[in-house]
Image (cartoon, rainbow over all chains, first blue to last red; front, side, top):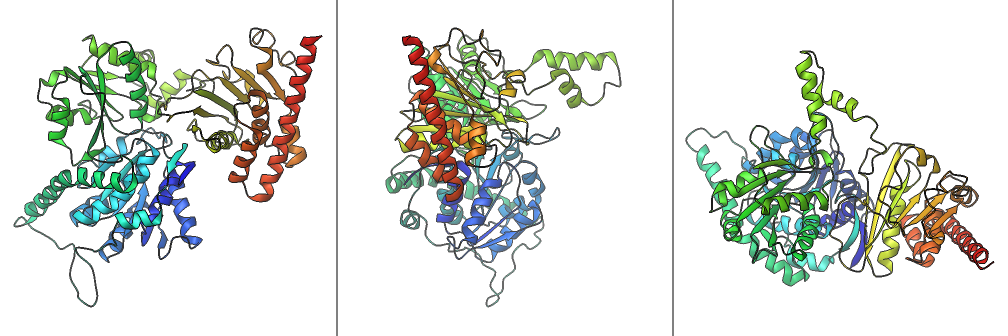
Length: 417
Length: 196
């Protein structure tokens, strides 16, 4: 059924269609509307049987999800930013224990300085925690990925994180096609746990494992993620047959067939990138886009094949490995068959900075002219940076960086974007 | 694609206005994308919300930099925020005020705009009368429908009823209707004046 609703509400309704039995969450922007929506569905009795547990922190949220999942319940939670960091220990535990929890991360920057706006730093900080990481391009894909996530998680007994851009998707009203309960039931069988805490048949989960078997536990985790790489495309195909649309999969190509330049990106920025690419194509540029849906496991061979004929690659990412450069680009570079120097990193949109067609067109054109630097910060205010550096040169007591920059910027209310 | 930017203050329903506009367009079979300016919205602070309308899927997610229409929910923002930034030269300006463009000191700025695209409506007064609270958003959407014809008043009414509980919705529906009528009369007066 077509609806014009907020992304968070769409995801809440899709989660409810997946019949979770335990939902636990601690509110944090921009995730709040999702769990509020689910709370209302549980309270009204529309989502039943399901227990909604208000917890005192994100650490508790993931711990309760672990307990619920270990007891054989389909468990769901959602968080963002510092909330994800606060639950980090339990996030690793959920993966190490092989519990098929599904969690939404409404992507947001991480402090300090405190910032509630969107980037991918939160999810990227947990990229090697053992969870499957999926990134949604639109709200339609966000809701579809959650339905696929439960299927994927339970088939592999691995937790899955569905990442959707905070505010840009979570707070956007757009058209979605909400599937029926019958469609979701047919695609997602009831949870049949691989392991279960049951008083009638007691087992122990989470024992201490020494050097004699710890490597093997990790190895098996890796093997299962590698297996996901083989299964995800088939499930996306099955999803397309059942629901009539393309959602999920490992990655998606757009106008790449004859492209000399291929832009690689994740999440909602892909829409603006495609608009920019269409405009550049009209001017005769041979440029295309590779959207990565599945970031973990990393689809090495699929990415390599997709980029095999590209003369240059621009990885546009909303995250930064401070002291190195790009995070996504490090992965792309490792999968690119050609010379690593042709893979450019463009760090963009940190802390919610707008990513515009104009700026994208500038860096993409610069890439095709061979003038793009290996690492670029899109729309960085060089003047502002220079003032901060000058302050530091002037005095050893230049004070806190963020506050100094804010004083330099002045009133921001007058700006549109 | 038609792009609308709505300026107001926290508590005036700016974000809700963009959302309702998107719902109204959706009900007419179009694609619509509404999104806020993603701030920590405090009561009284300047707030911006955006709405794009198109006949095909909308992929663009940058802020609206060159709107075809701006709706200004609070005229005190004229001196604080660059509300007209990037506005197309044939764009619409709809201001919540009982004053004229001249009285607001905008005569020079708007002199090259088509006169039929320059609109004012006392939306807060209408809201006080119909809703009992200074929330001008629904009234402004009614006025926007009358001014531009891009969406129908009927779709605005449906969107209001989808967004609010019945009693509040009906008060807002009346406010939207009043503002719609106000603009129609204003347009009629402009046409008569031009005919004279």
